[in-house]
Length: 221
Image (cartoon, helix red, strand yellow):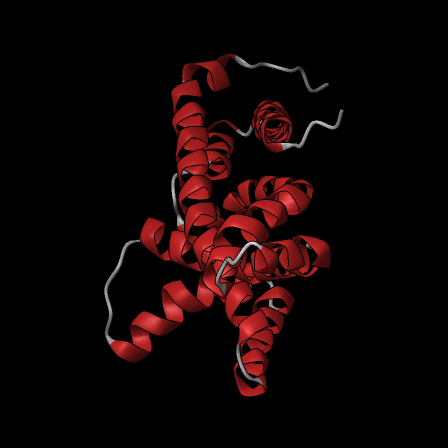
C-alpha cells in the first residue's frame, strides 16, 4: 500500500521555492513587455489604415491560436538552428511568453479603448485637448479602469503558463517538481505541494489586481 512521505520534498523544498520565484519573475517581465506590445498595437489598430489593421489582426490571430508549447519549441530550437542565433532557455521563454501575452492584451486594450464613452472624448475636444492629449488624459485612464478585470485574468493565466518552460529545462517550479519526482518517485506528494504553491501565487496576483482596481475606481457620490 502506498504511504505518503513528504520528507524528500521538504529536504529539497528550496528547489521548489526558487522555482516559484523564477516563475514569478518570468511572468512579471513577460507581462511588462506584453503590456507594452499590446497597448502599442491597440492604439495603432484604432488609428492606422486598413492594411496596418490587417497586420495587427494577423499577429493576434496567429499567436492566440497557436499553442504556447509549440511556440516555445519553435523559438528555442527552430530559430537558432535556422539563423545561427544563441540565447539561453530562460531568455527564449520570456521572449516567447511576452509576444504571446501581447497578442491577448491587444484585444483587451482594443476593447477597452473602444468602450470609452463618446461623451468623454467630446468633452476633451470641447476644452481644447489635442488628439494625443485626449488619448493620454481621457482615453487611456478610462480604458485602464474598464480593462482591469480582463487584465487580472490574463495575468493569472500567464503566470500559470510559466510551467510550460519546464519543457526546455528552465528551472522554474514545475521543472523542480519533475526533478524531485525523478529522484524520489514521490509524484503525489510533490505535485500536491506545487499545486498549493500555484494556487497561493495565483490568488495573490488576483488579490493584488483587485486592490489596484479599487485604487483606480471612480467613487460615485
